[in-house]
Image (cartoon, rainbow, N blue to C red):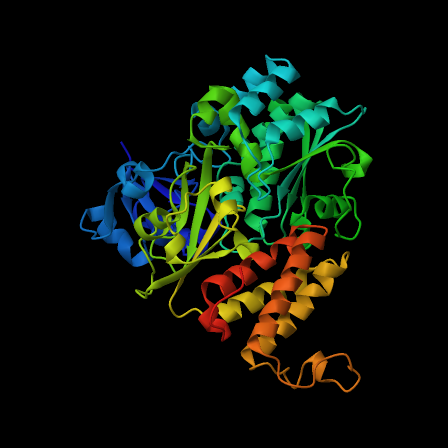
Amino acid sequence: MSRVICISDDALAIACGADRVAEAFAEAAPDAEIRRVSSWGMHWLEPLVEVDGIGFGPVTTDDVAAILDGSSEKRIGKVTEHPWIARQQRLTFARAGQTRPLDLGDYEDTGGWAGLKRARDMTPQAVLDEVKASGLRGRGGAGFPAGIKWQTVADAASTRKYIVCNADEGDSGTFADRMLMEGDPYCLIEGMAIAGHAVGAMQGYIYLRSEYPHAMAKLNAAIEASAHIVAPFQLEVRMGAGAYVCGEETSLLNSLEGKRGEVRAKPPLPAIEGLFGKPTVVNNVLTLAAIPWIMAHGGAAYADYGMGRSRGTMPIQIAGNVKHGGLYETAFGVTLGELVSDIGGGTDSGGTLRAVQVGGPLGAYFPPTLFDTPFDYESFAAKDGLIGHGGVVVFDDSVDMWAQARFAMEFCAHESCGKCTPCRIGSVRGMETLDRMRGGGRAGSDSVEALPQIRNTSGGVREASAELELITDLCDLMQSGSLCALGGFTPYPVMSAIRHFPEDFGIAEAAE
């Protein structure tokens, strides 16, 4: 029997040299079967190679001969028994690392389409009740109950409805959507088809960020290959233009319609008047990809995982200055400290762990004193944080938290659609205020405030307490007055950095 050699064709693995490694194995072992599979999510070991179930990594072309003759020192044993994998509770990513992304046989052999078949044997309302019973909440960041959103669309009177998948994964330190679309595209397609059956929608769109060409190719191929299975439901992929704000659902809908990607005022909600003015379900990739498991095993089985109002599992993405970065799916309730120090292995640099940002560029910074916080929606909200899309970015003691806070304001200014004043103007004023805090209370010579035309600014040196009061007031205004989460959440990283690391801002202690 010939050997089976599995190598991921995930974009990260390819970037690390997986294609070259696959070619080297094909040349050195012409009788072996080379399978390009999805990624296990152990990114520090990519390119990860499995030979008859035994893993090796990270592998280069120079390691091929030693792996084949059994003398390689990069052997990690059976991948399924590796502590990183064995400790996880993988529901959404149950096939990760084990199936060929576009092989329909692989998908069906691992339970694929079972959820869709069961859903189509049920009434739409029964499917809605199952989703509500699961406790599934939106995995894109807002955490809104998926079943309630679906019920609203189902109850809306309209001859045409839509399912829209928000695949505009733009948060720093996040990659779960990309991994799912590249590694298990049929799972997303199945979830969208189930949603269409539940709410009465016959058309779906996947709004994909422009930086994901590998996902685009996989999705288009998967949609074509599975069209006969999900029919009469139809799917199309639409590529975004790189605007971060189009991750917000109404900006996304405007972009889909060919309009400028800017926020719509609510109400009306997209569930009532969404794409082309019709009732629309807008859900994140991970939300829709959780649906097949829920329908195959039951909402109650999914709700058995998690804690409090945070039910099910969360594919957590560990990145930044961390030894073991990758995708770790587990039930809600694991602590932040476990994720970073135990599972993640601490900092890659060996420096002291100083801060962790959870929830993307608009997430709060947590110091080690808060590492006992359980990873769930309510626990993070109680600590003025948010879990967002599940991205965890690690920083050691070399990080400048003033620079991180300023970057949040700069990012907001750069990505703002300009629709509302608190976001458009507030972010610029925030940069200026933070610059004065670093400059000892004086505006920089190249700032707008230094121009002779500007007459309503203080000419003298401001006290640090005055600047702190100003930035606090500004953040309160942005949080309460912005139309969407871009301006509304920017205060989270700014104020958490000031609150927990006041020494980097030249102040003794921060305002509460």
